Amino acid sequence: MALGEFDIIRRYFSDIVAADEDIICGVGDDAAVIAIDAERALVVAADTCVIGVHFPLQTPAYAIGFKSLAVNLSDMAAMGVQPRWCTLALNLPPQYRQADWLAEFQRGFATLAKQHAVSLIGGDTCGADQLSVTVQIIGIARSDQIVYRSGAKPGDAIYVSGELGTAAFALRRLQAEADLPDTVLDSLYQPQPQVTTGQSLAGKVHAMIDISDGLLADLQHILNASGVGAIIDAEAIPANPLLRQQLGEAELWQCLLAGGDDYQLCFTTDLPEAELGTAVHKIGEITADKGLQITKKDGTQLTPTEYGYQHF
Ligand code: ADP
Ligand code: MG
Image (cartoon, rainbow, N blue to C red; front, side):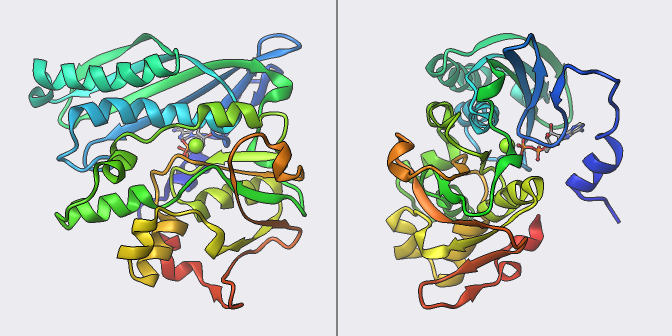
């Protein structure tokens, strides 16, 4: 049987480490952190996007360019760090080595890079059977401002930075060839990484992650890294009203709890909401008990296994 993603990482790639005191954080968080000096650290992450895996085949070139950088900026946001530089490795089949496609890809990538003042400083370009785009992102931060997955404490409130499930909803509509508003399509094709929010929360929150795989899967990474559990109030999860109007109950919960590709932030803190200084949504609480419970106002519990949790 093929091994799962996290099994592979844990079994084969977590241990290739020299005796190196400058590694503050290696494999296992949204980015690695390497000490530069007593005050500052380099923060590095890489993400690959593969056509047919991360993008439906019909995805426009602009969206592929935009999103391949966005997912990396999102990992910097999750550490509370300002991204500065990136590298770009392209595997291009012949049909993508065309001026029209490349100009649109470049426009998507450059638009987002400009928005966040990120410079492209290197990379690699080669032929391949399948389109894949790997971006490595690098930032510098004060070491004491960097936020990890591992700091959540019992009693912390759990927040998300914005609406969840919209990208998963858009993908369903696309696959069903149904109409959908541009704003909803944008959440799939042009997700806005929460870099400013992430940085403004640095120093105020105990643990943070970006929601790339789905709320439950990503929150579980915080819970595992912190040795805690959580109770989520399902009805407190912010959603685009269209989802509540157009989805049945089971599909709605699946999009909100397990829909990937949102790139909002999920974080925990003991500060009052008013002191966070940015608009956020409280969705639950960290518990000493290690389980993850999802409750509704009527007191019933949602069972994650019924809602796509097993896909992770
Ligand atoms: P994210 O979803 O935040 O991009 P991933 O789930 O892709 O993070 O990866 C989880 C962790 O495993 C990260 O710390 C990442 O750097 C690390 N990782 C993933 N693949 C590899 C690999 N092949 N070798 C070493 N580390 C890896
Ligand atoms: Mg991440």
